[in-house]
Image (tube, rainbow, N blue to C red; front, side):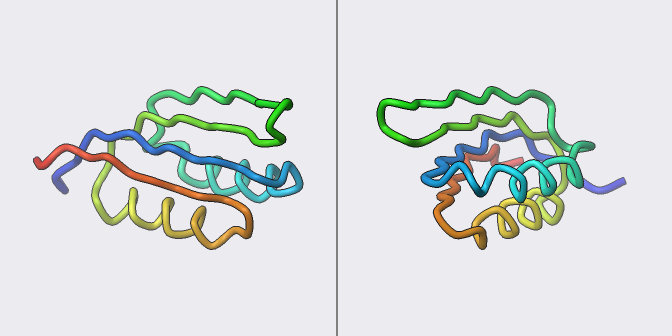
Length: 82
């Protein structure tokens, strides 16, 4: 069994048109997502999504890498060391 890590992923969406692509990627990786909180901040024209993830580094990196390739989307990861 692969070692899993617990972490948080912060996603800032600067264009709401990216939502469909983001949701498709999150759906593909639903098995590592423990919790999700999405907040549309309409006054600033952005949305903030916070994820709690538990999975292998390979799975987490694959998800965050795909998210980071979407235009107008910023992704940051904080993860346990072991």
